[in-house]
Image (cartoon, rainbow, N blue to C red; front, side, top):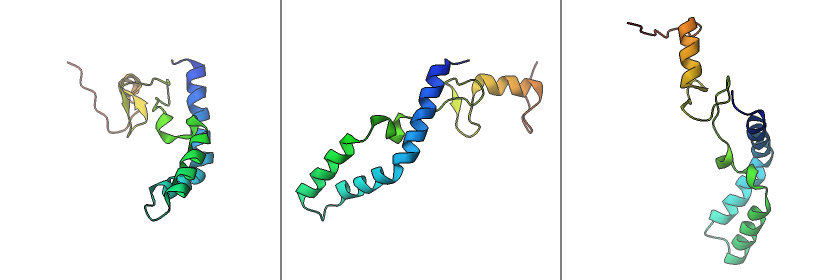
Length: 101
């Protein structure tokens, strides 16, 4: 099991990303618009820099929903390889055939 604080920190980041998503996308659109004058684009860059760093989607870490493990994460299943193996051994994942020989 991962540290509770690191899992909670990641959840806090998810909330920040959700709340600032609209504002961040509007500012990025202004920055990338080559039609605008350079002063307006630079002002948008400065406003973007003032947003919280944890509101960037890049800062979210994929973690296993069962254990919170940050590595060996399967995106499709939203769990780590270890949790997948345990649930597969118990027969709780439909369609998964775990070989043992």
